[in-house]
Length: 265
Length: 87
Image 1 (cartoon, rainbow over the protein chains, first blue to last red):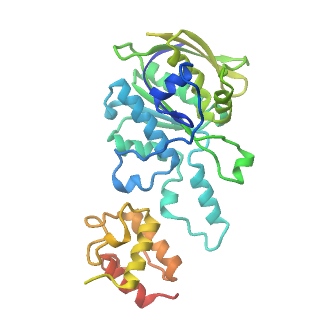
Image 2: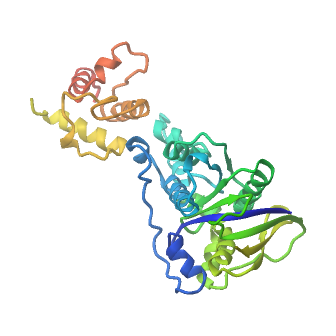
Image 3: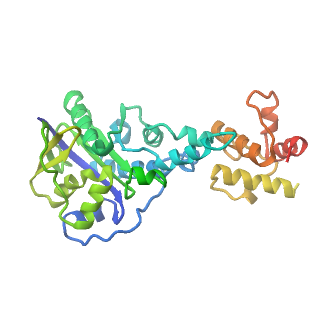
């Protein structure tokens, strides 16, 4: 079992415009109303990077910055774990579209953005940080993999880690093969020790065997959780929003899952 | 000297292909494109070379000894394009 503390939360999704607004929805204090995800490029990026930032960069930086601000941490001193099922799906589509036409001249900017750790690169520029950064993908288990990696870094390295999960839809025709239904990102600042900013203690267990996943009670929020890999963390955010103790299950691969006990601080 | 029609068209291509936050009218014909001035970097120059190739049928090579002169300003880039364009 790994024990860690949540110090800050970031959230940006359809009708979930930041943690303050999202917390009210996730705790049941406000009614969920879907609306386009309110994307904006980070003001911390220099002009050249800002105009090259696609959807995932905007998402990742927005939720990371929001979570770090709440935690009161210095951006330069926080390690990062980025996790996303597809990375920049718009960019993949644009490159694929060029590769099927002669003379197959791929835009240098598209190429520059095509690596899965592009978000990490933009983050390091925006935050001015040289802290360790990990970028993961694990299909529908991307959030669980990110949480597991973050918990391991917090536990083993005593690191303060920003876990940043983000996903957005593929354009057609890939959407038919791999439907991701919305643009959503979330961030969590995780640390080994409790402090005055700690919101909750998480006790994370990696467990073999299948058990039912924790689902969202609201039908629309459950559709979001099930439709976006990064949104698999919504039950955890709902527990943090409620301020109540909770026992959660988030699926991992091949019959494994994470058991997470949430205890408010 | 004010921008010519061809320079204005090239300025628009630069703004569009690089998603610049300035308008084409704001690009001074004789101001530097790279670094100080318009603030373009090496990826922008590569991107711009691709856009010029597609639009004017003119290949700009990365190992051309005259690149710093060609890309020194909107005016010099336009002069090079107008001299060598294939379409």
